[in-house]
Image 1 (cartoon, protein in one colour):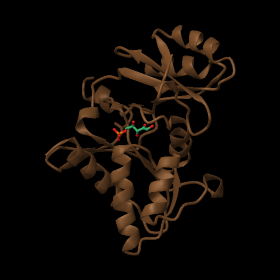
Image 2 (cartoon, rainbow, N blue to C red; image 1 turned 135 degrees about the horizontal axis):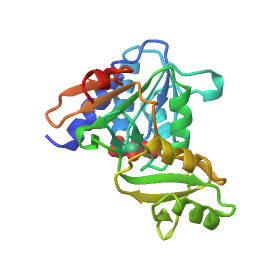
Image 3 (cartoon, rainbow, N blue to C red; image 1 turned 90 degrees about the vertical axis):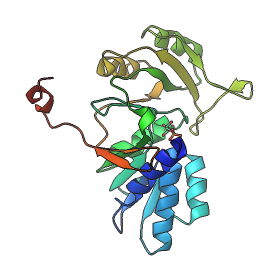
Image 4 (spheres, protein in one colour; image 1 turned 180 degrees about the horizontal axis):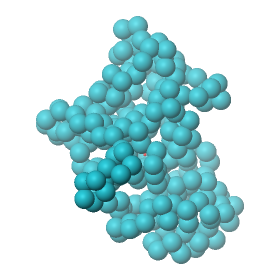
Amino acid sequence: MDVDTAKRAAGTAAAALVDDGARVGLGTGSTSRWFVLALAQRVRSGLRVTGVATSEETAQLAIEEGIPLGELDGGGLDVAVDGADAVDDDLRLIKGAGGALVREKIVAAAAARFVVVVDDTKLHGHLAGVIPVEVIPFGSEHTLRLLAATGAEFAFRQRNGRPAMSDNGNLLAEGMFGRIEDPEGLAARLDAIPGVVGHGLFLGMADLVVVGRADGSVEQRSPAAPGDRVAAGG
Ligand code: 5RP
């Protein structure tokens, strides 16, 4: 009865949503890991899928577990399943604590359906916290100063006393944000900075959020239909 039970419940429930023959985006992180393990179990029972991994770490896991892998360039994806660091009431996400945000966003955007798997500690009324930003090494200190103008202090993530690098060979800047009142505005400002490859705000992308709880139960949340919030008095 802990957070890992909740992550496992979400990942396992998402694996049940994958159809035979599907091309599937495989996310990165501890909740996605449960998804990959549950999907691999279905593959061993005869399900045919082609996985496209969002990180070297996930590719390695998929290979070990016997999930056939393919390239994104081989065609679109039927579904992508990935974790998140925060989910707000409008199913907007912060992602990228694992540093795989750029590949994760490319894969999520290429999928007909983007399914997010989280434990319930990730649910918040509004977005706040660390937003990772992948930055090319050229002019990176200058890019860091431009990032700071968005209202948060940014620093490069460190690993073993050295700047951490993404699978793409880029740096990972991190900014700590309090309550983000205008996620779309912030995303536009980050997108407009030369040197930024991508950032951890995934807005309007989630088609379904599968929430796992510590008792092993799951809840599925879909985006509100246009007008729902107004109709509900919000
Ligand atoms: C990696 C990610 C992860 O999906 C996110 O950090 C959630 O991880 P976890 O499931 O371990 O809590 O975005 O880049």
